[in-house]
Image (cartoon, rainbow, N blue to C red; front, side):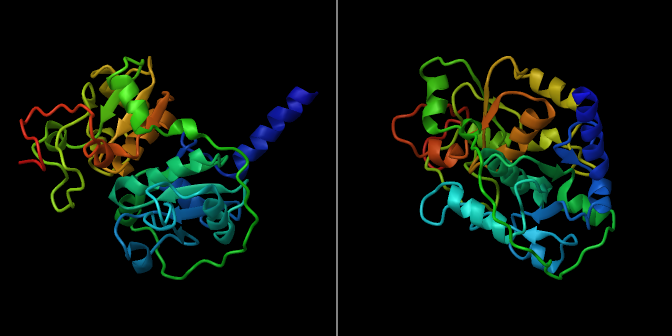
Length: 306
């Protein structure tokens, strides 16, 4: 009797939020979001890179999280504290059982980073809108500038998942101590080789160029379809990463420059392929500035890309 009741409850919950992506319920389509814009059990959150994007127009009932202030510690380089995360959720009308859907510009760079933070603080149901803001706009879907009416909650973090985060010591354990693990550098080939330290137009925040020894280079954008920015299928992703030896047989650490582009790859490996993966948010701005750590620099540059 209990088994049938459990099955019925699961079916009810599934119907209640429409049908999520067949590939993974952590990734939802723009159609799914359109159907749930007014669903009181769903809170849509924009996390964009560029300032002012949200204010020019956003999805109905979406709240805005500023990655550089809402989701980070204001004093030290760190993610938002547990206390501040709870306060952010509470004033944003997010309860522990709310389905949170994140989206943003630049193919969900910081939306994926937001999803990583949500996972660290153990939120039960957080998803990404596949294709992000650009796909929504390209499809001509409605946008508005009105701020949503929010009813405050009393959000409490019930568990944390610090194992989703890699530190410098964890990277060095793989590089120098032979700990079992794989490293994936998701930056551009130019950054990886050491020809440049940062993408064009971005401030150089590291003193040295190159990559972590042993890291495989799979640029983040290889995981998306060029026509609409959606993630490639699980089979395509699995084949692409397996080609460089990333097949889920050992723990993976991903990194980029500051941890946002690597969050996109972290999401693909973790929530589409189901691999054991951590995001190293210190990334090259920490590793490339650290004293006494080895680097690999195929371009032959040493200091500031020169």
